[in-house]
Image (cartoon, rainbow, N blue to C red; front, side):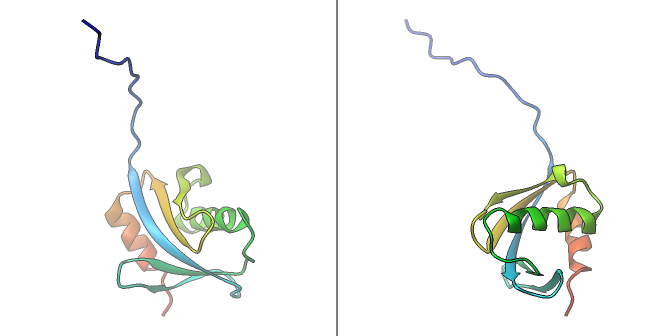
Length: 106
């Protein structure tokens, strides 16, 4: 009989939260301006649409704003478009939600 069990290695999972951000280019400065109906945060940024530059700037801005390391933030989807799914490690959803909502300028 053939062995149907595959060898695998377990890795320690990391905990954190994910947020969706819609980036608007060409603004003056960087600021969160709105929360859409689906919970997406709108972030205006003073950066041109250049492949990779938007994501780097976004990560640096979030790290600075949230007082965490850039290594704890990753754009996991939407790397080439304005709508991004961002993973933030070691931040629970409730505290992250509170921190981000206080940053939204109306």
